[in-house]
Length: 286
Length: 262
Ligand SMILES: Nc1ncnc2c1ncn2[C@@H]1O[C@H](COP(=O)(O)OP(=O)(O)OP(=O)(O)O)[C@@H](O)[C@H]1O
Ligand SMILES: [Mg+2]
Image (cartoon, each protein chain N blue to C red):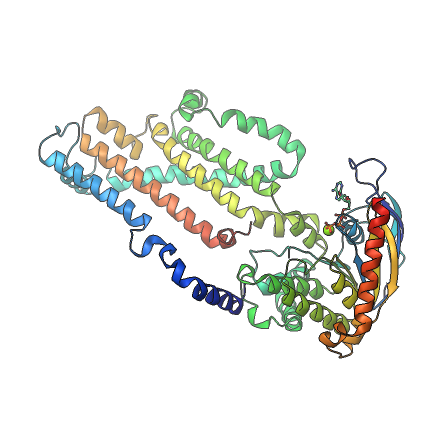
């Protein structure tokens, strides 16, 4: 709608209906927004955690107090735990995930395009991906270790496999859903096959690719702990594992919290990126 | 100047009810500076005919020629404007209009200059940097028109371009189309199921009838010419001759419907 049309239409409607419709306005004016409620929930959980642990209702071995975890946070960032500081553990984990992500994006997008465009590629690749995708990474981890040893390669490969499938599947879906009229419009403007792919099919699939990356990063990040079970000497998963072996519960909780916060931040930034790169999706245009 | 010939074209869709052709033995010539309008009820093969001319579809039999060359696929010499604008939402208004020139490999500055000029024709120069989803349906259709025109095709094909617009905007778009037709001297093929639109715009009106789709009537009209020569749309549409023609076409449509139901 043009700005003028909108203002004309909407003004007349809101004045005509104002008296009867006022109570039906978005309830957010005097009730709490979802975000506020979510924040309050988290604050409530923290308070319960603080109260039960400080009152001595739970032994610190099972649940250390928030203060203790914060203290450990300071200690682990400055002095380190298992020969590395928190930042080094974090960097090791992020490094693996980023390597795996780059490899997955580079390989999965062309795979997805091929599956979406070609019957042969679909016939060959679809069953392969669909066969391994539902298997939990921990189940094929031993096989990867037998094949590729216990070095970095195995860890990155495990995360890579977790990210690869969602991106490839999402890309193929996006490519298949490209609007026929947009393709035809481009053809009637003289587009060649390569140009169609470059200027119509790929940009159309960008939102789906981003969704695939978001889902893939989610599973990749959760595979991380599994990957770092394999003779790692650093990494958040490794930190949590070894802390658990020594019953250092506050470091365990610290590690879990950092893993959760990073996952949350990744999710939010990918959503923001997708809103930036494909704002038309928000407007109901596919 | 080019001449588009549709020569005894028949289309059978695979899988469609056997024996019933979507188009049967349709012949048609679109000469330079003509504005040919195909009118007909839903399902009579209008889109099929346009897709044939655009090259999206191959006829089962018959040929389509543009300047004696066989039409074998889509190409930039036959521009298309779709009912749902089919614009690219990741490009802004200017880049959408310049898209055809970009595909042709024109340098940025040159294609933007052309796109700006074309946007001026459809009166959207102030919106060139807007993303297309911020535009109204009517504005989007104008961008679609500008995109088609900027690529400078020989024939412009429009598939019910104004059907989704409100009556007021639709009238404005019809007048805009006539102005553009006058100014660019392109030959235009437009399909519609809006009777008044058809009578108002057409230099040549083609009435299609369904099952099988064929040309039931052809007539030459001059209301579009009159408007392009400066007479106002209101005065044309209230001219008794316009009303008479419209009623005549309406009776033809009804007559056909009776034939096809008996
Ligand atoms: N892809 C297709 N496969 C099979 N049959 C089709 C196909 N497209 C159209 N048809 C049939 O061909 C006939 C003509 O269709 P067409 O879309 O050309 O009609 P139309 O005049 O454009 O109708 P409308 O005004 O509703 O857009 C219809 O009977 C339709 O069912
Ligand atoms: Mg149609």
